Image (tube, rainbow, N blue to C red):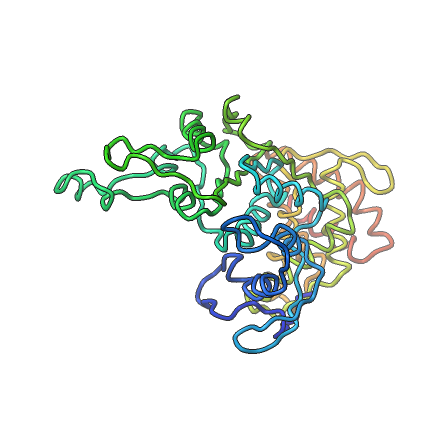
Length: 387
């Protein structure tokens, strides 16, 4: 069910309603402020809060009193990461050291989500980001020049365009490096000296040829283990990262909670008066879990698709189904809405995955549909969609 608005827990003061997606430090501004006001532990230099408060921000579960914009409020700290709490603890400890952090896992496991919230809590901004692609160059990681001014005036510090890396180093903040394995190996290795020496050399400026990192600077990188077109890190770069693997959610109750919470937040953002009944979320997450694991709850073996069937995909299906129900239905999501929007998440580049989905529907959904209306509607709609 879509989450209800709560004046005490809505950290939206100062937010721009015309922006499609707010960064974590804006969206959860009240929570960050409440944690800072109640934080009695020491924080590493240039950190906005202590490691214990950062952990509380990510894991949630507390309600704190804080003075927000002149008013004393009870501010609930929402849960933002679902899984093993020690993963978050290890990540925070790594970032407090001089070793960089690499979050590794399959697509859709929440690596970027965790990275963003850690950066927001620790540095007050999650926007110092390098997006790794095949087109990322060393200039994107280090610095570039205003060519027109260099031609007119020659190279000088005012003509230099700092990268997010350089800004993070100068201010003692965290740099987020998304999809680092998408970059070519030579580009990846431009990080080696930054992580080792904590500095960037600027040979064009003989009198000011080094930028040194301030305390608090570190790097959070993410890498997918399954996507095609990735480049393995060099041995030199691997040694400078602490690897933390983010597993796929396997606990059904946890996955249901994630889908319900995130879908509710997104529908609230879209201002959509649509309900997601618990039985429908239960059906959706059950389908995803069983197809992902290749085995049903009652022991029936089914084929696995070639694509990643992640919790993030389940959230997308829930949102698409809700929008479908809002625009073309009665406003309440049913099994037919889930079925219509699920096919595109299971069957992507490999058309053979149609057979995988059809097998699941025939072997599993049909039998369950004899006793459950939702499963019957799901079965009938999927078969009608893939004919």
